[in-house]
Structure formats: structure tokens, C-alpha cells
Image (cartoon, rainbow, N blue to C red; front, side, top):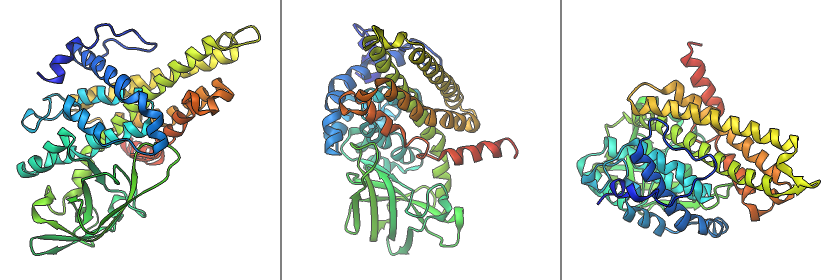
Amino acid sequence: MSVISTARRALEGLGAQPGERRLIPPFTEEHQELRGHLRRFVASELAPHARDWEEAHWFPNDVFLRMGELGYLGLKYPTEYGGQGGDYLHDAVLTEELAGCGSGGVAAGIGAHVGIATPPVWKFGTEDQKQRFLAPAIRGERIAALGITEPDAGSDVASIRTHARRVEGGWVVNGSKMFITNGVRADFVVCAVKTTPEGGHQGISFLIVERAEGVEASAIEKLGWHASDTALITLADVFVPEENLLGEENRGFYLIMANFQWERLLMALGSVAAMQRAFDRTLQFALERRAFGRPIGSHQAIRHKLAEMATRIEAGRDLTYHALRLFVAGRDALREVTMAKLATQRAAFEVMDECLQIHGGAGYMREYDIERAARDARLGPIGGGTDEIMREILGKSLGL
């Protein structure tokens, strides 16, 4: 019995939480039931370990195996590859609920595997590639990463320098990739390379690079997302066989663009959920913490802060859900997705900072986990396209 169908029991006994939503389109009762199932999993199997995993700067690969066993890594993928036969909305629910684990790093590692590294294989891979890479990734047996960003090429994808030289039976790849989530642990990297040196956007191809001789990964220390392994990957004379070409040669730029909207939607969904979680905890703290003889939440200064945060969260949620509705309906949602990403990422960091402020000295301590939420949120205005790039996209969409 699939996760999606068995999740109908999931909300039984699930207590209401502050900010909890029942049915907002495009979500249905099925998605709500799945939400309850996921919420219980996150609360029982991820959240209790978040602090230890953050301190270790690592979470176990067994998390992927467990989620594969439960069907969570393949919610939107076809059943013939071991997926649940769902759709993007099921993955949207997963993204929102992962915010409850309390570790941006854990959510990022799982999200990179499900949301950005395996979709290109699903959309553009051959049947052989889907059987060799997608199916075991859905089972959690092989962990995936997406390799696009380089030390000298971020948003300017056409400037990547990692190149693949044609040889008998495939390619030899040389170069490096930077800021790669899951890069240390990945069994394969869906990697953008130059196959035509002077081709610009038209000279990029995608190769599925498996862990092999010549592939070296080193962990990068970060401000936040500590439980997530983020890597510098170097590729030195790495042989990649012909059958690992993903999509058409020299047409890789279209593979990059194909998943950008979904990646940015996932970031918006995750940020709204993380803001709501931090707000709920802060509201509870403001009701319990007393100063000058009454709860601090009853003081106008704090009450107004909470009112402003609630408004920003609601605005971010509404814009994000609007973009999601357009996206799942197959509409061109470039402008709305870009707006949602831009509106939620900086807001998340600022909301987390206000939550920390309301906690006072306690917020600066690790005990309340608010300082971690603030650190984790800072990547939002950078990752998946910076705020500056989002504004540029929006400006061009307006004909400017």
C-alpha cells in the first residue's frame, strides 16, 4: 500500500498547532493526510536528533534509506521506478514539513536529493539511466547531488570552466564544482560541463558523474546548515562513459532552466514553513516569559513585532501558494515564482532575527535553537539565485 493512500490515517490524533492550515488550494484532503504522516515522521525520527547532527556537521546516510523505505524520496515519481505516483504537490508538502526537523542542513540535504538532483534524471534520462540512478535514489541507496556552481561561476552559468573532452567511449572531465549540497556523500553528481569550449550557453552538456578515481570532495565550513555536507568537488581526468550523457549534447542549458522554477518554489515553501515554526515557538515564549509583572507578549513593543511578523509570513505564504497553483497547472509562472522567492528569503532571515530579539539573551544561546534558525535562514537570499538576480529577472519580465 502506498504512502499516499496509507497516509489517510495520519491526522488521527494530530493536535492542532498555531498557524496550522487545513485546506488551502491547491492542496486537497489527500495532501493534508500526507502532511500528518510526514509531521509524525519528522517529529519522531528527525527532530530529536537535529542538535546532535548539527554539532557533528553530518547526518547519517541511513536517513535516506529510511525515507526511501517509507516512500518519501519518490512521492512525485512514477511507480515503475519505485515512486509513489504522486505529483509536485506531494513534494511541496514534504518540503514544508521538513522545516519541522529544526535543522536547515538536514532539510537541505534531503531537499537537494529529491528536489534538484534527481528531477533532471527523471525528466531527461534514458530508461537505462532511470534504472541505474533514479530508482536506487528513490530507494535511498544512492545519494545524488547537482553540480552546476563553480568557484568562478554562480549565476553566470555560461561561464563554467569544467570541461569534458571527447575520447573513445565517452568523455574525460576536468574542473571543479563549489558549494555542492550532498557533495561529500554523493554517489553520483548530475554535473554541468562545457563540451564546446566557445559555445557559451549552447556549449553546455550534462553528465552523470559517478564516484570514481579522480573525483575528490572536501567539506566546506559554513555559517549555517551545519548538518548538511557542502563540498568543493575537484574532477581530475575523470572518465565518464557515453551512456552517462544526460539529455542532448550541448543542450544542457535547457536542463538547467527546466528545474529552476521548481527549485525556487521549494525555497519559498521551505522558508515560509520555517518562519511559521519560529514564529509559533516565539509566540509561545512571549506568552510564558514574564517581565514587569506580565507576559512580555502583552507589552505593545513585543505585540506589534509579532503582529508584523504574522503579516509577513501570511503575505509570503499567499504569494508562494499563488505561484504554486500556477506552476502545477502548467502555466508560465516565471514572474510569480521569482516574486515568491524574492519575497520570502530576506523576510525569513529578518523574521528569524526578530524572533531571536524577542527571546533576548536566551535567543543567543543554543538551548532555544533560535540562533540556528537565524543562521540557517541567511542562505536564502543567496542560494538558488540571489536577490539581485531575482530582481533582474523581474525587471526583464516587465519589459525593462
